[in-house]
Structures are given as C-alpha cells and as structure tokens.
Amino acid sequence: MESLTLYGRAFGPGALPLLRRHEKRCIREDLADFLEAWYSPSPVVEVHSSGSTGAPKALLAEKERMRASARMTLSFLGLQKGDSALLCMPLRYIGAKMMVVRALEGGLDLWCEEPSGHPLRGLKEPPRFLAMTPAQAVSSLEDAHEAALLRGTGQLILGGSAISAELARSLRSFPHHVWSTYGMTETLSHIALRRLSGPQASEWYTPFAGVGLRLTEEGCLAILAPSMCDKEIVTNDLAELDAEGRFRILGRRDNVINSGGIKLHIEELEETLALPRPFWITSVPDAHFGEAVCLLVEGKAPDLAPYFARLHPYARPKRVFFVEKLPLTGSGKPDRATARALARRLMEEAPASPAGIGPLCADAPAGRNHAAEAPRSAPPLPGRDRQKTQEEHDEGSRHA
Image (tube, rainbow, N blue to C red; front, side, top):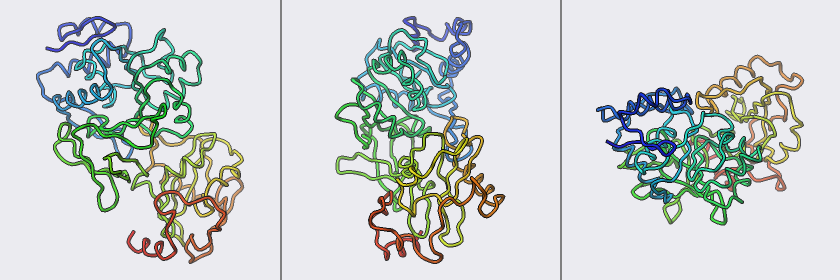
C-alpha cells in the first residue's frame, strides 16, 4: 500500500501511531485522521463543501477519482517525485485533502504547517509546490521573510476565493509559476488553472485534458469531468468561452443584481470599488427598480466619494451600512446569503436618511430605466450589459 513521505521520511499505514505522537497538532490530529480514513478498506472518504452558496454539506468522494484528479495536477505542473509540497490549509476541506493525495500519488515530500495567515513564518527555505488561499498570500506578502519564500516557490496555486486586482498585480512580477485555480468540492478540487505571473498572466483559465466545458442557456459554466465525477456539473458561474477552449468568469448568477433591467455583477463592482477596508456589495429591494445596490462596510466610514467616482452613477450603492463584522462562511468566504439578509434587515430598521447610514446616493427618477439617465462621460457599466441599448434593457427586464 502507498506510503506518505513526510519531511523526507516514509509513513505507511502501520506508522499512524508514530504520527499520532507528532509534536505538530496538524500532523498528529488532522493529517493522521485523514490518512486513517485514506488507508481504510472503504473506497470513499468524506469531504465537505465550503458553504459559499448555502449550508456546507458532506459528500462522499471516491478515492480512485481523487487519485485521478491528483495526477492531472501533477502532470500539468510538471511536479516530480521528491519535490517538496507544503500543506498549510485546514484538512476538513477538499483543497487540503488533495494536497495529501498529490503527495501520495506523486511521491512528493510533504511539509505541514498549522493553518494560519502566516504559514511560511517558520520556514527557512521555500517549498517546490505550495497551495494556499489568497488571504494567506496577502498576509505573507506583508512580511519580508515570508514574501521572499513565496517568490522562491516553484509552483504556487491559489484557491478558495477570488484573486483581487491588487494581489494579482503583486504576483505578476514573481519569477516562477503562480496560478489561480478553478474548481469545487464536487470536482475534487480544481479542474482548470490560469496564470498570474509573468508575461503569460491571463484572466482566462485553461482546463485540464479530458475536461469538457459548455455554457448553459443562462450563460453559466457547465463542467463534464468524467475522471472526477459521474455527471455534468452546472455551476452558478457566468462565464465566457474562447475558441481555444479556455474560459473566464464574469461573476455568479446568484451574485447578479438586476436593477431596472441592468444586470450588475457583484464581483465586478467590488473589484472596481476596491475600498481600503473589508466591504461587500449586496442588494436590497427597491420600489422603482426591483433591486438596488447596497454596500456593507466593516468598521468606521472611509471617505467613499473618490471610490464611488470609479463606478457608473447607476451602479453606485443606493444604501450604505457600516457593520461591526461582515458575515463569513466556515471556510472564510463571503456569506452572501447572510449579507443580503443583514442588509435588508438594516434597511427596514434604519430611519429614512440617518447620518452615516442609509441612502448615500439619490435614487434615480421613479419609473425610469437606469440607462436613460446615464451621462456619456460616466465610467462604463460592468459586465456583459455595458453595451446594451435602452430597448435591450427593457427587453432584458421582461425575460429576467
């Protein structure tokens, strides 16, 4: 039976008692628990979804399919037996579990650090292969020692949440390979990568060999990856496909605000707004336009005027609320459903125009489509609706 190489030493099923006595909790508990399940006779292991679009759920993943997924990543990145790989994410999630499976399948030398915002702090040399979240990368770049280790990593993959424009700019100058991953628990981690570093940096994801893609009538990405899952997976990600079979993500179908027939992609608004403190865009009901853009900001109010100037006037938030803490899922992703409910509750509780809360921008005239008032000099609307005419907006609102 396969053995795991950990810090240069092989551990097979019979060595689990040794791991249980290891000084690092992430090894003696989390890693040992996963290996016990992996080495068991059962053909499946339990994994949990992240909960970014609803309540986290338990799924049973076939070990053979996990091995197939691992081989795809190993091949794509050109990883070889003996290459070091750092595990620094919680093992309850598929991304961390797959790091262990890649080490098992490819004979990689696994290193383990406790999941934290600074997983590189205790290292003296960079690993050959590293998977981490964008938040961990941002924190690591703030420390000179950690940033140097990050830049020295041969293959760095980032997943679990979106890559901000600021982080992408920081990573573009890295001398080695940095990738953004695309995937989910149901596809057993990623099925496509896009380059973030060097002249090959792109917003387009390249799928692994054997992965089929198409767009649904609603424009959502559908994935057929027979090596990883039995059936086609239809996502809520609005996407665009190019002639080479690559794709780029426009936003989430459930993260679209339909305001007066104009469809505003929440992720694009957030990327353009780029406030210096934690914030999220959500929506609240609007009597005239159905939905209106709402901004939730964590902490005290920054001067929002220069940031709002980056947005088209009719994409600017009509309501702004300052909250003590933004809601997160268990995996640290934005809890969009809770944020939407919070905004609606605050809107119901807030006076008509309180100081610091409530409508920051005047609503557009009643009964009129946003596009009718848009000045020519304003920044363009985000998303695929930016070129629509007035008639197209009206037509779109009838079929929304």
